[in-house]
Structure formats: C-alpha cells, structure tokens
Image (cartoon, rainbow, N blue to C red; front, side, top):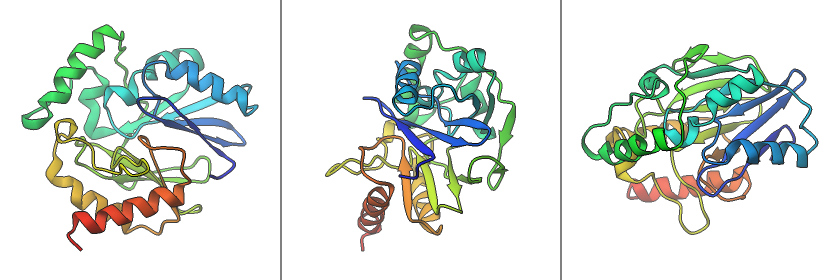
Length: 228
C-alpha cells in the first residue's frame, strides 16, 4: 500500500483516504459507524489534524454515501460524484427487476439511519480527471449501478474498483445479483478495468491483502468467469 493511502476498515464496507500536500480526500464515505472509524484511523496514523478537502464517490449505494452530508457539514469538503447515480444522492433511487432487493433494503435503511440527501459539487462522467493527490481519472464501470465508477491513478498504476467485485481470501466474487442495477454490464466492466495498466486494485469490499493480491484475485476470477 502506498504511504499516501489509508483504508478505513469496517465489517460492512471499507473506504479509502488519500493524502497530499493540501490535505485529505475520501474515496467514498462509509456506512454505519464510518465517521467514528474514520477518525480513529486518522488518529492512529497521525493524520487527524489534516483537513478533509474532498469526498470522491464511486456510486450511490447507501453503504457508500450514508456519511456524505454529515461529513460535508463538519468539514466543508467538496463532493465529486458520478452523474448517472444522481437519483441515489437525492434519496430517490430507481430499482427495477433483480435490483428491487437493493431498493427494498435502502428504502428501509434511509429513514432508519437518518440519511441526508445532498447535491454533489462536481458531476463526474467517464474519463473526467481530478487534479489532486497523485492524479485520478474516472473509469465508468457500470453494472452494480448505472453510474458505478472506478478511479484510476496512472502514476501508481492503481485502480479503486469500488464494488466491481468483492475480494476475500477464498471468497472472491461478483456482487450479488439482487444488488446490481444492470448485471449484464458487469462482465464488460471487469474487462475494461483489467485493460488498464495495473499493479494493484483497491476494492471497497475486501480483506487487508495488498492491492497486488487483490488484482491477482480479480484476474484469476475473470479467467474463470470467461470460461478460460
């Protein structure tokens, strides 16, 4: 793991913190208890006095955006988010067919967890870049949601893969079908991700393995999914 990246680990979903000379940037904002875990992780690495300058979203599922509005209120951070998931940030996501399962879960979770809708400061489309940290480029990887987006750092040859796949030792898999808005697009998104020049990937659902190990797992699974 590069010294300017921290992963905030939680039972449900991880998220990442990037650090440069200006301050900190979150890649997603976590789920239940995420703010407490974020502050604990920053303190443990001596980053707690660094300002949080921005929140960079990968998609609009509740386990990634629950803490966005409270963090913006606390830190005045800007938010950059995939345009195609705008209805999620507004608290009015549309789910059809298999993804009705995700819709039911989120319909229960939003009021129960006091989700606060928000409007991003910058809308992100495929190929857009952010001139922060080591440099980031949006890679549209639809399937899990319509706007699902990875963030690629060409300098480090690393990709934040969001929920493209889950990576645990012995249990590497695609996201469950009931959580995917357009599952038929996922195979092409996997291939698009792997077409990049990569030394490692950083999933949101994964164990503490190094990015290179997560990449190896994805490549192995991709070959199996392709029947090779």
